[in-house]
Image 1 (cartoon, rainbow, N blue to C red):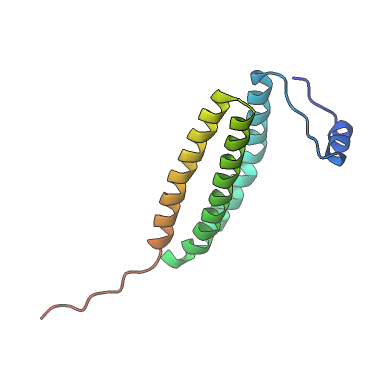
Image 2: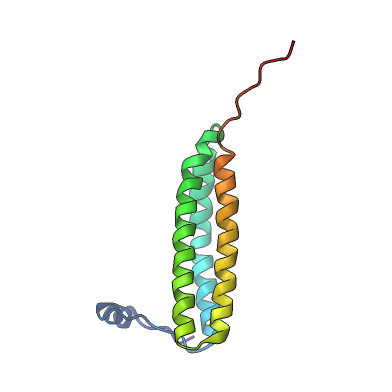
Length: 127
């Protein structure tokens, strides 16, 4: 895989640019590498954080934050889809639309999970 040097990436960044890979194989490789490199640190961080939760309300802050991040991701995908449409990249429009739909489903699930963190009041015993 032809990877740019850090110096090239730095100069691209100065001009508001970033390096673009030239093949789908390169894109798959960099995505896999980035995912693998972040795997253990993320697992450790999230496992330690989850271990600190002591009741249902403890899940709520993280779920609310996650919902906000997913919402931002949905807006990003939607903006990219619009631009792909403007540029006539029809297959990319479809794929980005599917990704946005998947994020929208995740948004609904995370919102429901956040709501379920609120303890249900106990009902008095009937006589």
